[in-house]
Length: 149
Ligand code: SF4
Ligand code: SF4
View 1 (cartoon, rainbow, N blue to C red):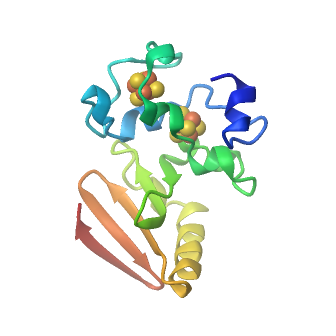
View 2 (view 1 turned 90 degrees about the horizontal axis):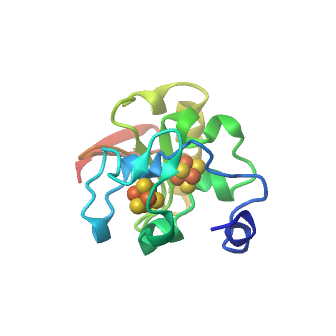
């Protein structure tokens, strides 16, 4: 998509993926049989998708929170943070972490902010979690609860 098309789809002006590509690594993409936590076969690191015009709907429709949320500064761009913030049901906030940087979300300023947002979301009965590979950790106020999947 062009920047104008991205903006029409909800991305913020000036928030472009550039050489990030984190979502092309951490997420499974069913349409092309891609598993999570490894680079897509169509990804040319440093350049981007080599199948861009024919990329699956899942790829076309995805914008991480950093691309949509003005309050997230450059440090929250997934390639900088080490995780992708998004909100797939049933989660109101999910940090999908680069398995090569599994503790990135525990670094500051991320950890304190994630815990604060999770606490706020819990007030409204909304789920917040961090996922590294097959391990998902629910953030519940002052607790962290590991669950499968
Ligand atoms: S994680 Fe966000 S910024 Fe990075 S490539 Fe995906 S949509 Fe773009
Ligand atoms: S098909 Fe392209 S956009 Fe989709 S995950 Fe692979 S490299 Fe990324």
